[in-house]
Length: 65
Image (tube, rainbow, N blue to C red; front, top):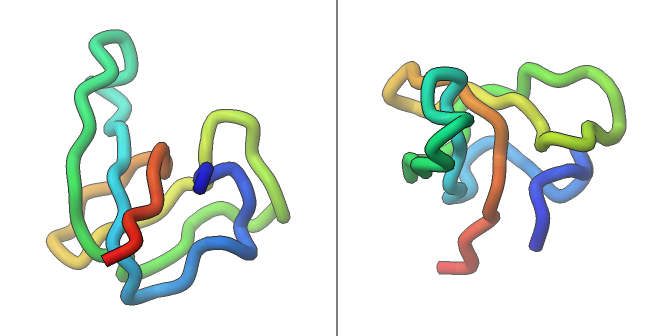
């Protein structure tokens, strides 16, 4: 499931994000969503979130665990 729609993302779900400094390499970081930072309904590069450990990035994958 892509992370471009805000309605797909809720606090507490597991996701994989790309951080700003990793956008060129595409390195993904896993974690649990603490806060949704994007206000619009969709974003072409992924909805921006903050993970529970404080890392901020754009959602690339939503994990179904």
